[in-house]
Image (cartoon, rainbow, N blue to C red; front, side, top):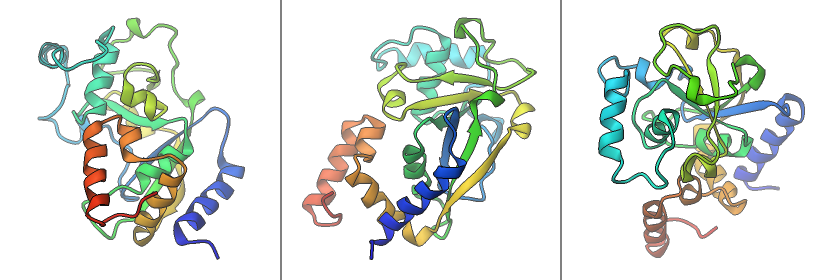
Length: 224
């Protein structure tokens, strides 16, 4: 019999055999009860909500940005991937990356993780991101942004992002296709690590590697 983590991956792959599409994007959330709301709309007092805050972010983050973002979209993507609230939602073209994030820690330790599915055709796909009004109050459709190649972290995660207004995220055409029981998250992470999906790789961050290395030395996590 397969260990639990491998069973979860097997079951997920079986779902993908019928639910996965070539033009699909996926999103993993550590708590299946969370709805699809960009972080900046969860708290009106935080994050990058207007051009003035974006300009401040660009000024202060330029010391650390490598490579230097080429346009305002890349500055916003960089902010999103390092934890600042924006009007972006994180997705990926890799279903296993989504499964990895579905197995993350949630504030509620008993929370199941979930993987969402959406079709790229549900979003506007502009030819030139330079023409996007990042802080528009209204659009016909949310905007799809291919983030691969825009920074190391977004490339590692096969990242796609969708840009939203205060209203359009309420009408996202997406659905949950898989749920990971909370008690099986840790085993699934260990199985995914054997497939190369590790926290340090997906975050492209040596501090993640150092933390993991310390845990392995102390015997608190199995070597993949």
